[in-house]
Length: 281
Image: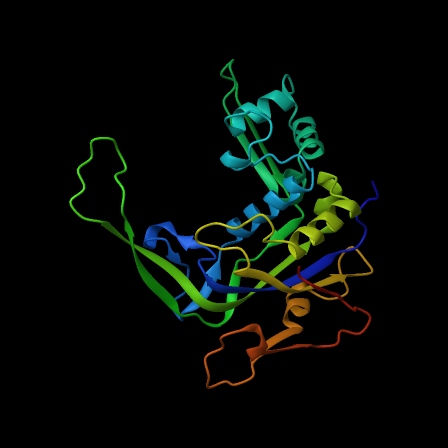
């Protein structure tokens, strides 16, 4: 595989329509918002979706969802032990993990597990792919819908009336995901140019095979992906400046945006650095 030689920055614009993009378990699973009413999607949630897409594309993944386990292991400890059995030297352990699992060489991982001989292992890997939490361009409106359960959950359960519940969702939100790929860290983990291409495709198809009751098919969409590949390791511009070059503004500042067409997307010119602009699926 070809080594990654140039720094990469990216921005993905995604829409959420009548869906819960990322519920907060400490707030009744309501869609995440900040104190200004801006919608949020955590970086952990985004990485979970990227891992799922990597797995869909045939790559070995260390941090697997329980319902997506493809190797029979019941825990991260069992998975790590099977792949690194007998390895005590930390650098060799980290190298083996990076070679084995794409998410480890992409995002990094902390391996802190007890082994059968009680010696244990503690190895940290810093990954080159960094992801910001997504934040909406405008404040989002959170709707509530009352739902009922009309059947008994257990045999012999006596139901006198329907059990009530609440479903929360964002009416419409337009979010921005920012990220970067660091060459120096890629050299340490073995993250390659081919791996970067996989990450790009995962971002483009982020919500494929991701439908659920909270996120019906078609309710979450990648609208545009901006992908900058610099001409050097350090980058021609800082990631902050590259990310700021994307401007998304409501066409009617006094109105409430209800769809992607209510926004204008513009891009500042950065001399010598032109992004690849990709439409989502």
